[in-house]
Image 1 (cartoon, rainbow over the protein chains, first blue to last red):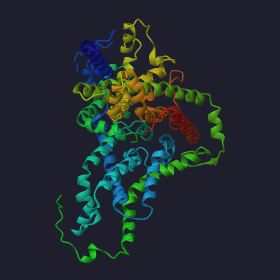
Image 2: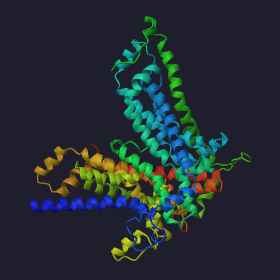
Image 3: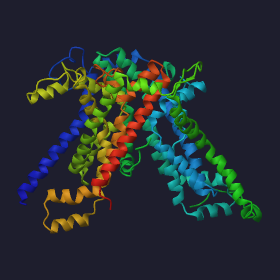
Image 4: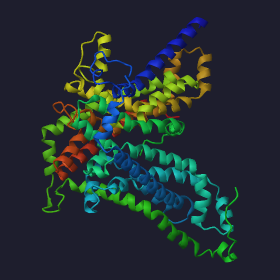
Length: 276
Length: 313
């Protein structure tokens, strides 16, 4: 292969890559442009590609719904889900790796079998269960069903099993009990694993739509995605303000993404994240 | 690693408890450690999974009155309900649109941006970014792009002198438009998985092929592809499962209705409407069982097919 053809094929590859990258960014960009359009500007064809930087849609849409409340709801639901799911996973994973008891492996398999249960079969019965518990239309309806994370148990158990047994022996000689050992030794070392699990729960919970849509009817407990969907159904032609709402709901995740993408890419490459 | 433990060791007895007692104590402790997770999994996975098998065979109402045995009535009503079959066909159609495009797209893009340079890492970031964005919020930009009068999509068609489309307003184009959105949203995830698989293809084999004078195409076909075929099969399975459960994107792009003319009514959307808008719980539960059977059947079929083309090391 001559030097020239090598260069031109490299150039083509770079060009096609740029086109691919632009294709994936463009839908977010066009929403951004629309959200900053002036009223006269929106309806042009072909569409224009530079924003007019009119902030009116944001000001207006901010008063159309109680955004601080919806952001607060989403944040509360997300953080509480993470706290509960991490706590239950840590305890279970510890028992399944450091404690010795009969049927340990069998119990682990029973937890793993959860991954075989198709989620869509659980929608209706879980609604009935929450109805019987009197929890429909609360924060808890959106939190509790994610309280046990098999993915979390699996990853943490994997990590705990990699810790040498001698750590525990040393801690025990120093007079530590299991809880003390877990809190002061095992957990500080498990921080990266905890971070990974928390990250996936965060993204899943922040973006969850179907379940909150089903189990909530009151605005006071609804997350941001449901609020945006209601706005969408009610104001389907007000593109500037809808786009502004969409950008507002997307922004926190985009910002988070730039901080955590390294962990995400490594995790997905290992096959994590295919199960929430 | 220094232990931040200041308590002095207790008696020798505490350090090495009598051998007889220990298994029992660990067993009791294990119960306490496992109980929280087990309660959640039991209440919100195993109990409802059992209920889902039963609900479809009853006439059930939320108030709990008049729960009577229905036999196969709900299943029979579903299978003789025209819209159910439309939704069934739509769901399959959506899967047929999504599975090949996802696999092809993911492999092509991964091959394109495979490499360690900073430039390709930026492209990779761009491709993955949509995956973590909320579906409802980002579908707004797409609704606008699909707008027949002012949208970007028809402008792009215009560049190539293709007549404009009605996109989401057209019964024939609505589902492909939804698939386009879903590809945009989810493909980055699959690209990352293929990239990981590509980096595991042994370079020694590729070098050997080069020395033997193999062309790029032949190296891809004879070395790379067999090595990443298990990953591709994995992608086929998870894409199938995900597409048969399509809900949020359809809800967002059809205004919650599954239109026009039922063109985007997927099975899960129909189940949602039946259960949570019309409150026919057991009827919807019967449909859910039929959907699960459909997913199971399709995955088993693909597993059988895979024995013919997947290469395991």
